[in-house]
Length: 406
Image (cartoon, rainbow, N blue to C red; front, side, top):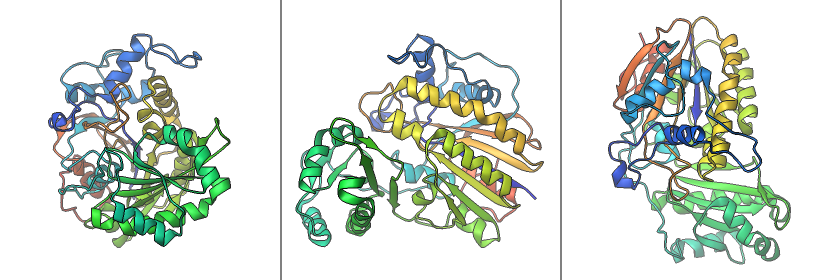
């Protein structure tokens, strides 16, 4: 019986979408611009990573060929291959916005054809009535922040005052999010989660996609966010691939923050892990034990949170090289009827101004011993991925998307 494994490289876009100009992202290209910077000699100050991008396995799966189709021009800084071992192409997002839930849900067969709610960039970002209700229900002395901000920068700016005052740091961004940062030792991790549960209910009338717990540790001048992040997502607006697979006696194993993004709906097992290596180790472990008719879905959040949003080109490049170096381990564990799909949910070009996501096409790479290599071209919706997985696993067709398998 077949199984499917999705490696979701969070934020790994491969070229600006046709409507990128509506989002101020015309010319963004996460993969292409990283490869270009690396080829031009961009490295980090500690010389931990230098030179052209080295991702031979992803290239053999057709990544650069897919990116060339997406952007209409070759990727500078990576070798051109003529033969590939996987199906490859790119997909266009139909959902509105460029946020994590909409990208994931569309992959799982449910495009989000509605407008998310957003908080304005001007200070204060949050409505007074929302904050008053939040303070009252959580019994807080006040909040800090109340603005658009980078998560790492705002804890450096306000972390000391947060510890002294007991006030959580509340902020947002260009995404549909309400984020709460608090120190695990001085404020308490469980208390932070409880605040987020209250906030989730309060922001529902504003149509906000996620409330995100952003815990951190350390002392003044040396604060560091931890892997105990938790996303409180709005539920998908309709049954997804996850729901339908479980309803049809299949198994969904959600690794990383995947279950959070789907509001834990249609999830048989949740596995938490941190870092590229940790998430890959968890994926290998799941593959070794997963029963037939399983979907293993891993979100590699570090590409987005550690490197895309922080505009860290060498860090993003090194993370890509790390994941690429581990692909052979996964291939060696695959069963005859397994398929692996590499995809993304949006872009987050680390060379682009600001710190927000970028509206881009995503890669569609599909590998398996029973899968014929070759181009699948342009896919008109991310939902083609979910429809293809449904076909592969032998369940009823989804409501959206066209299969590129069988």
